[in-house]
Image 1 (cartoon, rainbow, N blue to C red):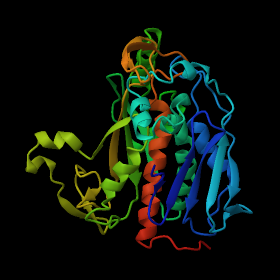
Image 2: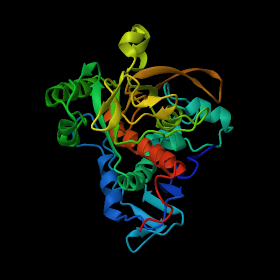
Image 3: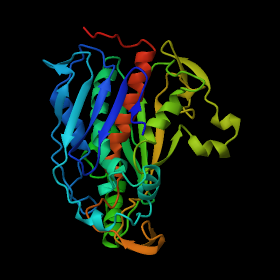
Image 4: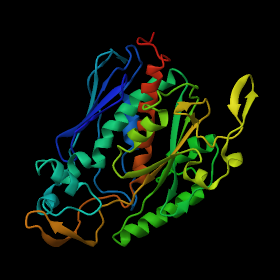
Length: 363
């Protein structure tokens, strides 16, 4: 497995869904960064399921423990190790399904790659549970980015075919965090909740789309030809379980446009070079152009559904069927919003350090 990401701001993920805990090691964080344990806990709490019909009944305490790298409220320059323990575990259902790969999950591919030695309980390393570590790393990255004024906002724009109307930045800040589905459009949010709850009652699930905006990103971040900014952002986002598509700016809709529609004209505004539109999503040639970075991520329907599905028995190599029981979200989109934010922040922090925008010691 390759469990590390980043060049200068490097994160290493560890733990499994039903193991003792999950966590993250962050190497390369400058010394002197003000970090309170509450800052990290606040981010991790955003990932917890809301108490509504679409959410999983599994509710972990997820009390963050700082094992190293932070002393007297500041980073020391040593690797930062952060951990949350797994406590609300029920592995009983996975024993009977051990040799029955669940459709839509990584059970089959993990079994083949690791010869059956992988931890299959709850998906093991392939579970969304490991994203708790991503969020902890994101909390540190956000604190680092705040030193140079960069802000990352993610929010739900679609669930189960219900699309939100565009909102202002202030509207996103105010409304998304208060919504159970993390949607900034209150009217659309109510309909999204209805669709998710209906899917659960039918033993089914739904997916959706998360949009994220990174504000105040300076021009010049990115290392072409292979470490392009959008390339590394996409790599980080696609490490999130259940995330199946990434687009920037106008994205796939650019394929239906003409150049006159999709090009972003340059202009001078308040002595700054800007573009009059942002179809490029803030990135040109793999390098940030100073405009807001706009990225959308497609989240598939939760693979665990309470319906009989066809599969095969890996032990007998015969056709079989499976009905998944247990505790699962009918839609993982709301819980993935803070994870998307985190992985964007981690990537931008790495590129900001590579560009020399953040000193190695913060006074």
